[in-house]
Image (tube, rainbow, N blue to C red; front, side, top):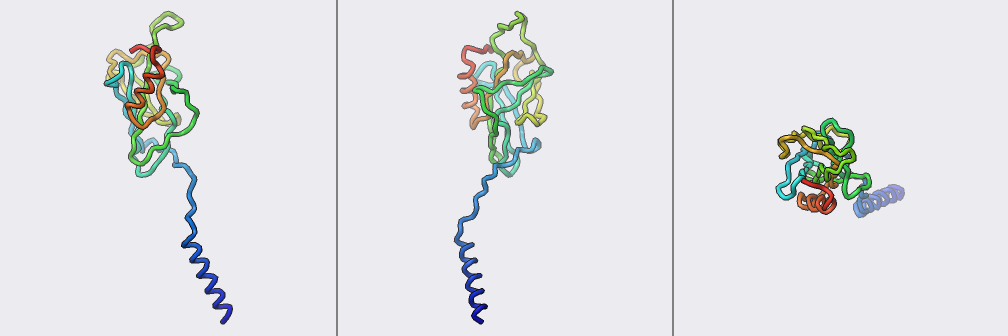
Length: 179
């Protein structure tokens, strides 16, 4: 009988401790966003000449991550727009149904080493992370009916607002780029 009372008291103590102990906090970061969970958009800026406004929306019901900056490539040219300010590799967390913004500028002053005109491409491709295919956008829909001229393109990291992204691209390229 005494053993049964001790066992019952021990069980009650364990139950009480479990109810009053703080829950363990998960330190795991959200998983990477699946490409099918994202909506990518690109449009010419109304406020800044030569700037294309980008957005990525997380259409899933859970938080997920994308690369810290978009991957922007141009037609069949090698390479991608470089993040400005320069960023360390990492991720940007998108809450469920949240949108992040970036801005990209494709053309530096045409002072090319070869003295020729910069290449012109009919489209660009935007991906939220380098391991994703992304979405293509035709030059015509981006306000460049004759094609997008490309020379030393840069992009901002993903940011909380389009105005913030455009301000950063203007600051980072002031006097460096032409429309």
